[in-house]
Image (cartoon, rainbow, N blue to C red; front, top):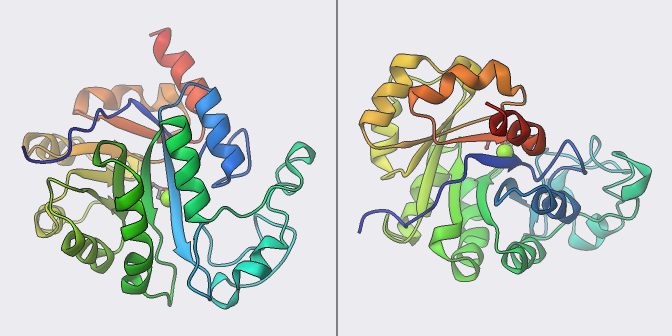
Length: 251
Ligand code: G3P
Ligand code: MG
């Protein structure tokens, strides 16, 4: 055995079904499940008091009714926020999800997760991995977990907790650098996660040839993406899993 026996889905709902529900919330994961998605992509980071939470930005201004940096917030502060009303009245009262609550929901729904270790500017990748990774490894089976990050230190530190047989790691890229292969080899990566509009066909074909699964983010226009499938792409990370599925089913 090499990597965990992950059945990669064609579509992964980005930040949950973030076109239909407030991103990175329990509601967004439930919406993804209802739409038929089997996997979600989520972002994990730490509050100032060390609590791992599911959140993308460094602060809460965009996705809540409050203000403040995660780095200075306690769990009690965070639970005072409404993280649903900004998206729509039907979601008022939604709360920031702890990693613990999110993992429980993923297990209840038997969903897989591509968990992005989100290292925002000035934050410590090691502290984040130390706090969040053991909880994920002990809660989810290896077949339903991919840990991804743009941050090389975070990925290397993850690899120290678990071998490639026990944990699938994904390397995130904006523009794919010439060093992509060395970066993947350094962490014994399972997958490469490029920003799809910047990925070149020659790069994708080399990744595929080398045995890496390719998970492209964030594609929301299935017809614009369509020609890329033959490059050897395994999965698309999308805000619009239902629309993408409708398109694929009809082509
Ligand atoms: O994991 C893919 C994608 O989520 C990376 O970018 O900014 O949406 O977290 P971002
Ligand atoms: Mg992300």
